[in-house]
Image (cartoon, rainbow, N blue to C red; front, side, top):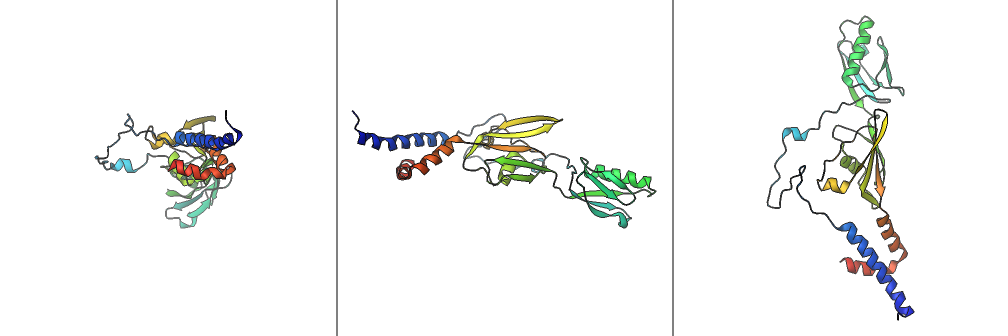
Length: 245
């Protein structure tokens, strides 16, 4: 027979056991092993240096969008060279060239469109160079359990791990195995589910992130349960520290 006093003393111990079990399940690391996509070098081995091609990202065209700032240089016609902000509808306006749709074009494609427009207004053999000075349209959104959710610029080298790092990493309640990337492809909404812990182990490559992607980092109920137990039972902190040490 369990006396009431003993029962009260057993409840904190059972709660400590539950929390310790949760922590053990969350903290158990999986071993790093070689796969067809990953070669694990042992402690006595040396990682080889990367090739030159490994140090550069694959070509990903930078597209011009609304409110981007571009620099237009017309060779030998300094009066036409200028810095222009694309308007909210994705268009620019230039003397002699008129209004040109810049949205969704690369810098080289827009330069060619400006040259065509200038030829139509009697500018002989125009040579135009366009550079993207500041892009606000090429961004991805990251939300959920990260420390600084928001909009982040997308470059050739942007990947899932890089944008999480840009957001100052995952929060304490993040669920690493539940990271969703939402993307529109051909007017069709698609979603990919990723496991960041598996990517860190090298189980599969770090996926590329593109402009207009939305990344959502999931929430871990187990971590919240642990926080709530500690908050509700301050007397458990000392026994927990003893168990964990």
